[in-house]
Figure 1 (cartoon, rainbow, N blue to C red):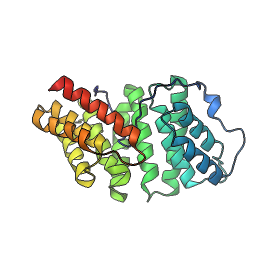
Figure 2: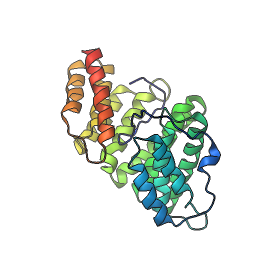
Figure 3: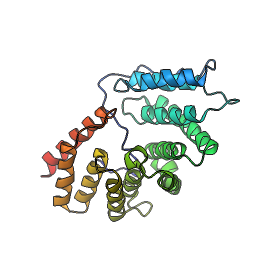
Figure 4: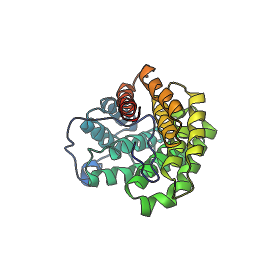
Length: 260
């Protein structure tokens, strides 16, 4: 994986797409009228389940956007809006204008979810994830000043539910350490500790095996790196995360081929 400053890649996300995105403007995700939250959530979940087609994921964002009533906020709607927005905003295929807009709107949803229920992990996790993606896109203006916020949000997730999204908060903190080396005190050693904690909680998270493999390569611990990369190929995909699993397998195979 290429090293980028202040980059969080959430282990539960990140698909490879073959199609093109038909949406490119901010106006296309603006709600024209409010619809019932439960109706939007049901429709949005069906669309998001088809997210290997990026247009379906964009439609999921638009569907939830139409139900975000400032006078009648819904916790589940807000954090799922943040999750879907993160997904769309972090795809390479998403046009820059749309990515910027969905991330901006998505982090608003995450902030609202955090305020509505600070004792649940969802708002904190997706707030940190989106802030990490914004940091990736603007490492100087956003990234450096956001490290503390990202870290605090993910640490809060760990306090509430360390198993959330397959222990992805520890994985994200590990990636934060890897991405912030040379800028904000990040280190490979700290990253490895976070990845090890994540795997102690969920040993079947292929993203974490991939990420700790990359960290071990950076630390010149090739034998350990190879072991974890090979684990990626052995683990069965989790139900509902088949596409993500496929991506980690492809990346692990590439590293095994080029590094060993």
